[in-house]
Length: 312
Image 1 (cartoon, helix red, strand yellow):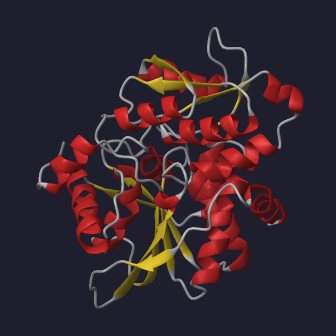
Image 2: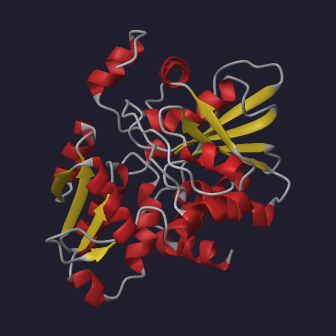
């Protein structure tokens, strides 16, 4: 908790305190709330952890420049903070990265290197990339990153002290575990679930097996989350902090995106809508449920297709 409270002070003035608002839909057995991280300056929660990590780097580390591996949102968080600090930023992205996120990285001054999914994932594991000599900022397996994300948990409990359940999208686990660490300290009985999409749900599979299990990864419009395997340390944290993983279909995510747009005038990307899909389908249970809407960076063409009732 000391690290999370320190992170709150560190990122003050960089990341916003985002609102918690009711989802404008009716369920007799549940009240659903939205933690709108889409309203951050970069359109996602990633600015929190990135700011906290980079504020803890030495001047020598920053002068080398920074590099991160990301499908887009973490890249924007690192690039935004790098520009603020006046240091160069390189981003390793998979070939499937959404164009809207690539455009945002470029606007923020980041240098993009596209590579295959396998080489992109290898950068997470090795914390390096051939030909790039810079300080690696990891998207999830980093204590300062998770502490920055943990500030979301503090805000949720301050705005809704009697929350029963919190649902958090799972990519690498930094958002879910960071938020859960804060909540577990302050409200141990609150249920906390990760949300994954069926096309890439390694946590759910690994949770049952008790060890990291590789899964078949299928690219989709849900591009902000979804990997082939869970890092061992992140699985260990998840088993300690979470109550399980809720897996939703692409159709359920698309329906959640439409619902958010039509009822709340909220634009969410696929990853951000996974938590909402878990709640509106009843998978997250009953009572007062908070869904972390982690990001809103979706290609406009994909959004239009979804709003028309189809899946891109």
